[in-house]
Length: 261
Image (cartoon, rainbow, N blue to C red):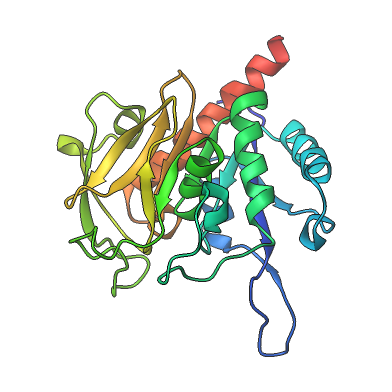
């Protein structure tokens, strides 16, 4: 790894609901940037543009996304609310949960541009994994009722692992996590999951009921989305640490390559 800590941008935005003082607050869990710091990265937070929150056009979104992506070596798309189904050509299902219009278009733009134009390493976590899929032509189940037979929204604490995943042998994710027998136990806090993997991607992990738990691009790049929350288990779980280390190492290589070019 370079002596220079690679810069990892973390998307964050205003809350979709007002707090007890009737104010909308901008937020991201500190678990994300702590995990990046522990892995050797330098996290910075990337707020959605204020104009986009009031209905700006795609040019505004693109301008902010381009400036941000030009400043960072890697991108982390965190968890949060459901992505509005209109971005995958669907009406809201009855079981759709909270959506956040402050986040959707901006994070979809970041995910798409990071993949197609900037080609920087990207890690998507839970909602972030779904954002990656939708941005690049995939689809998600709006709700897992009738699909899942494993508890995907656990009752255990966030730092506790819940169910087992099977990693695809030979996948980049399996190589990064270094899990025995290509199996890991993860935590789980979601009621949505990827239904259709986007073109150029493959499923790299499934839960015991067959629900897709991770995707990765087929190209020789770090562009990986996971459905669980490794930032919550990073202190006591080696595969979680390995995942953030993989992002930071890929971003470090990105920095070296940029200097060479």
